[in-house]
Length: 297
Length: 306
Image 1 (cartoon, chains in turn purple, cyan):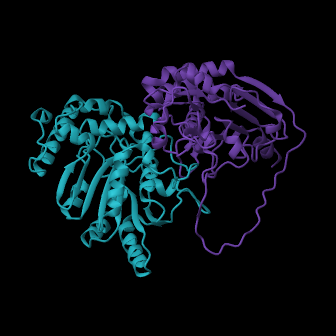
Image 2 (cartoon, chains in turn orange, cyan):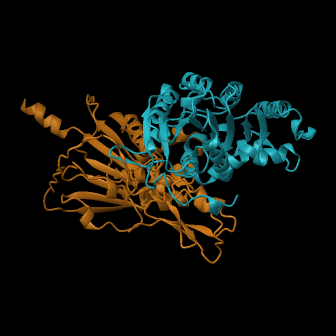
Image 3 (cartoon, chains in turn blue, green):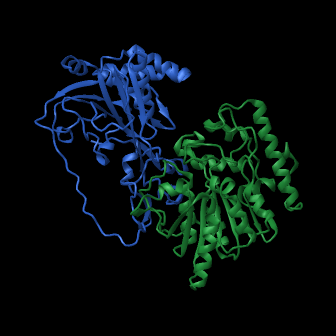
């Protein structure tokens, strides 16, 4: 029995949780990882989080990689590694929930990660500018930068069991004609990713307590922001140049979100909820609206 | 109509979970502005039933009743009868997708139309089941890719607006998310008419139609400009083209080639030239039919049939 125990400790078994937003390729990334691990003769599993997914809304996916057969079919609650395709998800979700001490965190961001947002455990942190690489390598789907390939590239730095050539092969087979840009992005991310060792004091315990309330009539009440602050879904920010604006209200009527308001004879964008679809930019007859890349510090 | 005449009050609240550049939330915003506060919405399963939010919040600032797919018209009929009995004057409006209208909700819709119930039925048509991940519906046009028509749909779409005209209801109209002022005017008009009214709105869907999210308005406008979608009003037995469709029929505006509309969308990217020719033929036949139906009024110039 002793021997068996030792064997099970020695065996390679990684549970990876991927966080991002719809359209960034979270589920695809999970599949690519699983397929690559499979090509490296491991057992692998890829599970998307089931729910009403929308392009732009928070999305989760799970990957298990093991030397032995995987019998679980559940979501991953205590991951060895968390891949965060979009740092903004951290504001709405506890992405580090259940992360094991000594685990890995891969974040796609262009800014520096402050220690305060990280959990109080020892970690290997990998930072990569996924959006920057996606923009540079022209990796866009429907106008959104696709950061999944750069994040996989960065992940390979802390996960030596999958060769980057294997991933390259999987990507080439998966995307066929369009795979060249993805492969370039993969290598670019692998080379430019920054690996940091972070030593935490102890595991932070969080208790979520909710007061039970009395509900007499189960009817929903109108509220602004039922899906949270949807401004976090934005990749590009529309900016109005008021010197060109003639207040024709084309942007106001066409905004799908209703986050352009008429205030004192001017149109004002509510950046708390603007999802950054840039419809306003396309309907502006005077070209008074421009787009800027969104950078959250 | 000036855009500043449209009220500033918002009934579709921001911070809902609709996709970037959603055509249906764009249209719903305008529709609710036209309907005003005294409105009850009946929403069957659809994208709207998701982006309206989860309990205890709602993104829609008027009462909403969620119904099963098949029975939205029946629920609305009952609501209207109940409100009438209580002496409450309110618009009862069904807001359903093309799946809930063309396929699953069709029998209840036909029943309510035949009974001439005093409700307004609005179908927002994105030509597929977008909510469940892009499956074909009977509103999907010929050649379009969906996850269940991987090599392109082999059949032309059916036309429920024409079916509603055949029911002989007081008011039928089509609109497009590209022309929201036109939509606003039509909803205002429908609001004043008594009896069963049907409005169908073409609402492009960026993830389903595979185009860049900021081009929703452009795509919706092109659908009308290329003749893929015809804007009209049918009022007490008289059919009248409106907006750009009317200008094209009167020869004031040249109809664009449909290729311009198809090329923008990934769902049509696999089409062969023979298939594009088939779509051109379909458009020409449809225009001819509409010219005939209208009994020669604003006769369509011959060059638009070729």
